[in-house]
Length: 140
Image (cartoon, one colour):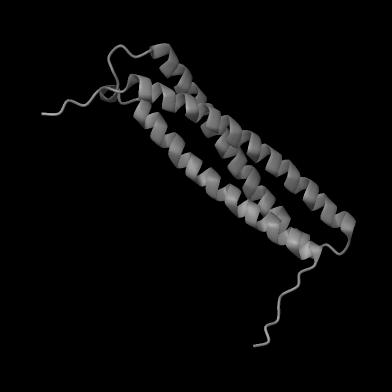
């Protein structure tokens, strides 16, 4: 069996990687939107928590989640705008043109990674708060 292997040029590999990263970021942003909504609704369910819960911590966490929600919206728009721009990389016929898109890609990547890191920190605090303040379930 004589199998031909695909050989890609460096530019083609770069474009494929950029495209797959963008798709992954968009999926993450979409899932984070669902997560944030879930945590906000959960934190507002008073029957889920002990009556002596720390209200100041709760208010702080809700505020942090709302900020993450706003940043999520901004990052989602950034990704949509970038996706439209990035499609033009196919039109590049020189390294300088491609470098502009690579720099833009790195900027978007950095922004997304900062957002992801901050949201993970906030979610860690939310998890801790939930675990420390959940009501025990009474089994009959």
